[in-house]
Length: 168
Image (cartoon, rainbow, N blue to C red; front, top):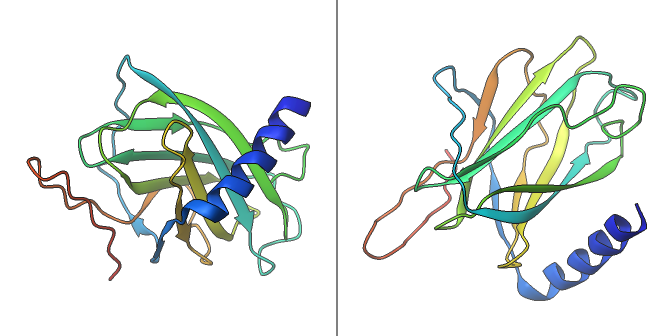
């Protein structure tokens, strides 16, 4: 546990000096979403910040999947333990994950929420630890229940390795 806390503090300090990309967009329904898997593994740190407008406590199941324009994606099922306050109002939670390495910048985030309490994330920050260039996604919207919702989209040109994050 102490290692995780130290890693979170270290990466927070480093990220402020490296700059980040950000995206502000409302979540959209994504019923055709499928989870992929690959063999090359990298380490990721995901930090969620729950809005002050969110419910004071949630027992809802929260899952995330993020990835790049090349189809690499990391699945983070059931991040929270309903007995904890990980996603409560004002809370900041950090999760260490392992998953396939990204071959281009992270350019989307899918969020799943199941339950009756509700959850309004203010932002989600994703660090690929080998690269240390985080992406921060600003939400500040209620995540609807029982469906995958996608934030952002990828615009990838294979030869030039260009990724753009856009909002509507």
